[in-house]
View 1 (cartoon, one colour):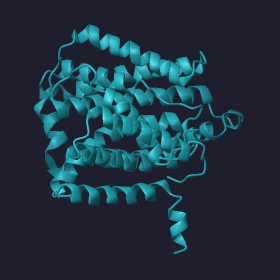
View 2 (cartoon, one colour; view 1 turned 180 degrees about the vertical axis):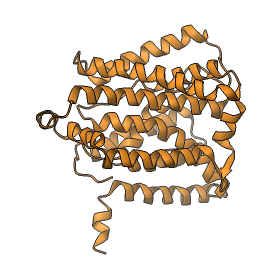
View 3 (cartoon, one colour; view 1 turned 135 degrees about the horizontal axis):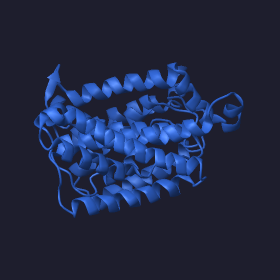
View 4 (tube, one colour; view 1 turned 90 degrees about the horizontal axis):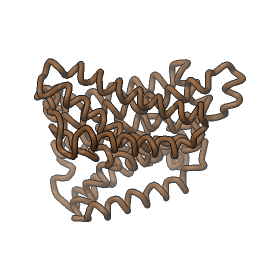
Length: 318
């Protein structure tokens, strides 16, 4: 009983409870919603969101109200580059991943340079970058699907690889472990928390604040580019606006997981749980036949409520 009040302050515990409630509600509304195969399918979709949300987590942890609104365009760019390098050939998967990740990493570094060196507010800088990338995608694709996914990539995303789980889920689990180790057990990870908590104190302690923040935006671009590769494997083709649907959910997932929007507190484990919550919520809304615009309204309202609840809280655990 004494542990209950403490658990109610833990966003990860709250997210876990919400996941169980959503599964129960979904099963009640549509029998089979919580069946193992259906749950695995939902987790694959959550993994796609979780990868781009990893970069969003890092940017938000870095403080200064850092939110990356360009991840949608980055996902589209990553998918376009990967699809055209890959062209349906299994042997070109690795070069495609490197090309997509590299292109988006460089675009992310531009975001970081604008925010850090030119002092452009993150929302303005990344929103401008999103517009540039969307225009670039229109020019390059001329509004038509471009590029093809390799069969091995598609199989990795959706087909069982080990213990009945798709490779995408195994990769996401491994990424979660690596992110935890990076943030909690490395000097670079602890520097991110220091910068987000108190930028001036971090600078006086010898942390390269400007370089750290630029790198965080670069990593956000990298994760978004990798998401584009995975989305390509999931959908098998590239189309304009493929990443738009990930922008708002990637922010909500981070906040649900307990990462403070002010920076300096939180972690990726909570973000992973937040991604699962959002995907289950979206599935239930789809089951209820709510139109896409209705789902978008609910997502926006959810973000506003979470900002009121968590946005100014800097002592939440994750």
